[in-house]
Image 1 (tube, rainbow, N blue to C red):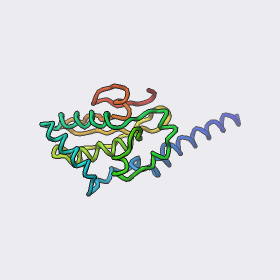
Image 2 (cartoon, one colour):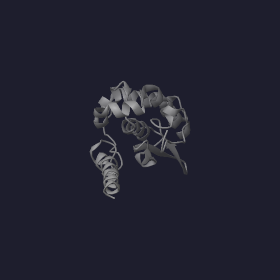
Image 3 (cartoon, rainbow, N blue to C red):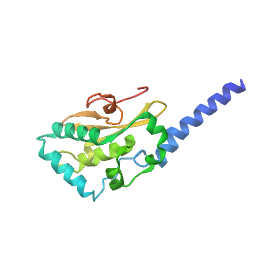
Amino acid sequence: MNYFLLSIAIVAGYFFIVFVLLRLVAPYMGFRPYPLPVEIPGEMKSAILNLENQTQDQNSYLEAVYRFVLGRWEHSRLKAGLLLPKLFKKDLTEIWHTKGFVYCTSINFIVYVLLAKSKYFTAQDVKIRHVFLNFVPHQYLQVRIGEKWVDVDPAGAGIRNQPLGTHASFFG
């Protein structure tokens, strides 16, 4: 009986630390919407203009942002477990200039800014969502296009070659 209670306590402690405390201390993982920065890096402004010039509506812009982010940064389960200090990056310029691996929260913050600072979307068109993925919380976005909400998950579904409109969850 004592082993059972100890097991329950360990599992409950793990879930509290990972699903509550972590969301309180990790940037862009909290329980509130992202803050939309007033100033963004010049290179990011150029990327937004470039993406806007290649597209003609919300749907094509969202697709272009998804492809752009997938081509610029990477995410993997192994690195997520090994590169924990990167989870705590919150400076937009620093995240923008990061090469290689970034956490789902950082990728999603970049996507959010690319969308909300464009001519096609506003901050209210983007919702932050969290799901259980491989024993930790995973974040993805939902973006309003017209009257429907589209899942945007470059760090989960995207790295698994799943299309825009899907998100990863549970085990994958």
